[in-house]
Image (cartoon, rainbow, N blue to C red; front, side, top):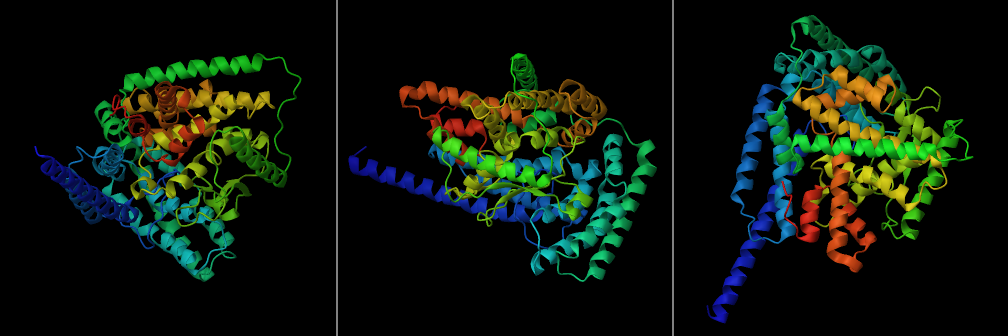
Length: 552
């Protein structure tokens, strides 16, 4: 080929690639606008998104509309040919494929809308609680949205009653238990909100009473049907593998996941044992004596962690990133429950501090809060700086808009869990051997989650067996163990994300260190990892190192 013709052909290819990339960006923008309107609410905090105001609809007509919308997006995605694109653009293409697969998972593969009554608790009470995690006082727009979500509860529950098809009895039991005392809880919430919102108190109280009527009716229906419902909860191997391959983009079979989890559990138990065996004169950690002292201590230690990251050349912490703070739980959130009581802010609220609402310190606190009340650094590292809040802020400002969105928790939770041991090895907890014990016990829990998640999905564990397993093997309190088991029974694939994501990061780091040799820079590696923290680790590794092996 003559040079002029070769150059012309090359220009044509580049133009075609640019046009295709722009087409993908348009598809992504259209999809995420649609997704913000129709995505179901969950009890998780990492995947929260900014949504348009207004009512939600889970009627069969609305679900049919979701199916049609998904099919149109899938058709547009399949028409795009990413072959020959630069790797970063191919990564973006796979990300949109993951997002589309998650919708398919929600609608057809794991259709909680027709097999899990607790799904409708999430679409009503979790949706309400989520809007209350943003700190008060609430202006007119936010107050109107709060009232709208309360008023929306009866219609969603009626749609749920029509949609549910012989749900598993354990799922129904969970929903029944979650709704115990719901009228009094809503009344307490409404009373506590009056000082923080603008609606007429009579309107809010009336809406809460009607919501309570609907919720109690929903609970009664479940109780009446409970003896006739099946016991089987597992989705099965095929569905689980489909999730791993298409949504999470994890290149491992269930048996490999089990082996990885077991090996890490052994390591965690051994390291926790080594730590406990150290001869030390350091007295045991004590639970904070009061909530104000706890909050002040956490704020001081958050600043120390930021300074530690910079001084040790571990990770760049831009000045524009605000702070991870603790705050007493407001009564309206305490009364309601139903979600993670925190606020990581959002893309339009980057100038606001992140808030974790905490209970009053006491000896009766559950597993995580007891540890946090003794030393707030472990949860700050996982959730705040350098964990979820920090990662989400960096990702929300990514120059590539496709990477600003949540795809799967494997990267997000993997980074949060990786940060814990990374900071331990870097020396953050050298002053506190008992805090190091906490970190190793957290490691034990996250490793166990892999085994529980896989066995629940494959039908080798029941919900009750999973709860007892956590209670015995971590060990942890009964209530926290049951909460863990419930979450992982109804949402397969989430519990593995901490441990498997962390192991993928460790391999990614090792591969980068071996490939780059003396040129490897830990801060540069971490800056890339955190900035792209919404991108599954296998795809990050491909982009950073050009290694396509082990792609799902």
